[in-house]
Image 1: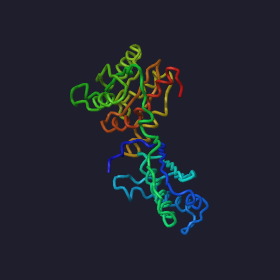
Image 2 (image 1 turned 30 degrees about the vertical axis):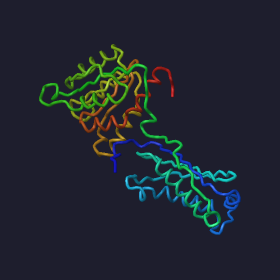
Image 3 (image 1 turned 180 degrees about the vertical axis):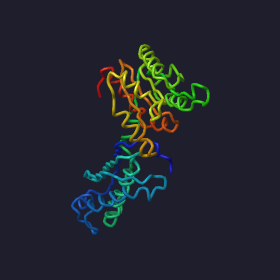
Image 4 (image 1 turned 90 degrees about the vertical axis):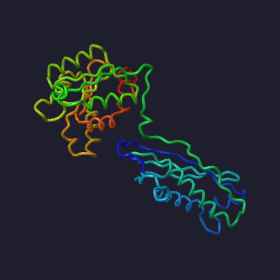
Length: 301
């Protein structure tokens, strides 16, 4: 199966539809539940719900999901029964296959229960009408890419004792979203140097500053404190989102003190210093966090 472990959990939904066509008198009997095999619609609905739950057992590359809702409805036409299926879950992958499978099996059940009284029964096209959820629903676009800086705060990297990985990962990841990195710098874990550099970015009116390092519990980890001192408005939900995401992957995530704040129109994000911590934090925040700029600019939700 495709690895979806890095994805965030969101509300996912999908709607699929199909139809069964038959003689008008057959449709009428099915609608009343008067067929040799009994109540067509209720049996077909039960089969469709079961099919949605069994989708990963039928289609090899589908992930097992805890479905929160499977709603099946029928529409009566003169010579057709329309079938509509909506499936919902909170998870890391979509439920379109569950909706399509449920629609197909519902139609097959209707077909099976009517074929004994009508040799002309046929199943129409099974199709996906809509799917929602996942990062694509939260992607943001801007007339001009957001202007950003990446700041690495590390004594060892600035002294040349270690090479930087985390800052370069941030720069690469920003190429996937509408963010242009105008500045990439490495400085020591020095409170005044960090403060001066962050204020410089704010004065340059950069939209976004992403720092890596200085969020742990070491004696020189001071980036989080500096950002709090500069904050005009702190955004606790961003730090919480990083830690919740990370905690599901490593127990050490609880030790991160990453914060997020606004100063003027500049959003300051403090990410962990480790490359894995950076990857996980970016996966947790982007592109969703970019919606902040619509709010900052007065666009609301």
